Length: 235
Length: 112
Image (cartoon, rainbow over all chains, first blue to last red; front, side, top):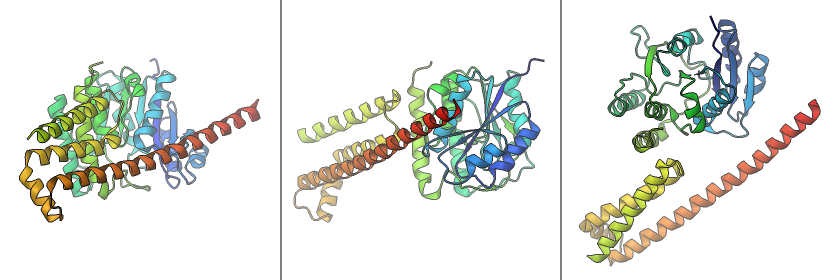
């Protein structure tokens, strides 16, 4: 079997307390894959902790937000000709044990964009805030309308991207709140999009990129971005 | 009447150009927000002049046209304030970028 080259992209902003454990888990479970931590302008020990745990670390000189961080990882994946780019959050919310489930559909060519959903498995009793659930429901409906693909967890940042899709994302990756918009983009580029069930853990550290006061802005921005993307050129 | 048509045309033109700029990835939502909201407000008042009259009366303006001028002035004051903030942010970022590049150069020299 030819072994595919997989780049595990870990965006991390001030995750010094948890990043080491995550990187070690990844390196133990998946010794063949490369772990790249994108230090998004952290002011704590994130880069040192990640490096000591055995990850390759790149540091952004200032905080670009999740989109800018993941975009950096995807550009590196493109430049270095990786077969799959896998994104997993640096705060420990995504359980590395499920990484292979997210990865497999892309490895065997079934999907170009594989998303780990916390709502697909019945046993996962993931506690989400009320507002967040409404937002997820709304984007799932909107994306269903635009792409014809029904997703249960469009805001999930636990996802794998195939080699055909990486160059498009490397050229332009959405900023601010990129996850739902990236799905619409992938659809525009003719990607096969799907979900796999994952369990998410309680956040070990860090804070969500979506705070209460910005929920309205988030909803407006992402809705607008998805609608605009529909108007963009096909390829 | 003509003033209203004029306002509507300009607002629509601005809205379309901003949306087209975002579509071409030359502008992001963050920076276009203010323009989109402003043109939406203009369209709203243009299509419901009685609301404009009432609001300007409540705000203490004798003539609705004065209220419109006041709104425009406020809009531009805030716009330039935001632009100053953005420029400052960019300035800090370029400085930081320059330092990062210098640090990279230092690391490369030390290795070779």
